[in-house]
Image 1 (cartoon, helix red, strand yellow):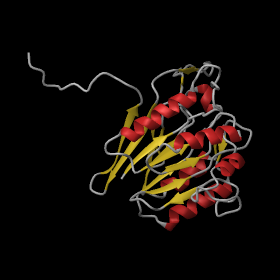
Image 2: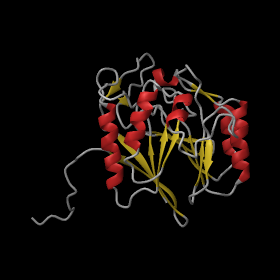
Image 3: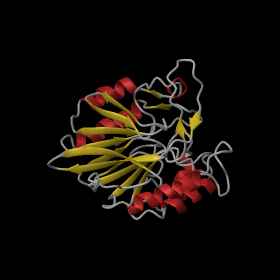
Amino acid sequence: MLLAHISDLHVLAEGKLAYGVVDTNGLVAAAIADINQLSPQPDLVVATGDLVHWGEVAEYEQLKMLLGRLEMPVYLLPGNHDQRQNLRRVFADQSYLPNEGADGGEYLQYVIDDYPMRLIMLDTVVPGEGGGELDESRLAWLAAQLAAAPRRPTLVFMHHPPFTTQITSMDAIGLKGRDRFAEIISRYPCVERVGCGHLHRPILKRWAGTIAYTVPSLVHQVDLDLRPEAEGQFRMEPPAYHLHLWHDDTGLISHTQYVGSYAGPYPFAVAS
């Protein structure tokens, strides 16, 4: 099983730039082309939020057009830039997305059981806020899903990471309910990774008996400034995504794939 994890696409209506600078649509299109050309191709793609920039219907329509170019299934989660109602409206034909009032309640969270690894998609969004939350209803839902298959290798995906990063501006819009979340995850050694977005940077932490991480953005990256007084800024560092490769005999191996055209590959053995 090969899974591509993408995040923080910030798709806009056609012709718009994020922050007046970033051609997010063009960068997302380039990333999709990169994923399609991989050999072997991923079996599926997971996108963990901030799918669009303002949560508008026109943006989700643009997103749907772009994601429609993928040659494999894609599974979506909302982030703090998303609007659940508009996401549901435009992607109503995607049967994996729960309707409001379904098992996950008002939240866009669900389980995918069709692959060698089980995928639990957890909604951390608080409407109108930059930060996220795992309240008792969402945590109870998660606990029930983990208890249903406690020995199956599992990936948990969400938008907001459950740990602090020392990037002050991003930690200010972090996740509430993380302690109780950690208690639940720590009961289940089957959880191989907790994969997140939001930070627009690759960050890795040993957490709650597993590995929690954030994936880079497909568009702009948050500036790595660890000074406590640092203000939030972004840089046009190379876009990237993660690839998770699962084999029953080796377990889960994770790689970072950078999007773009770079010189090479060159052989290590060169005749003098």
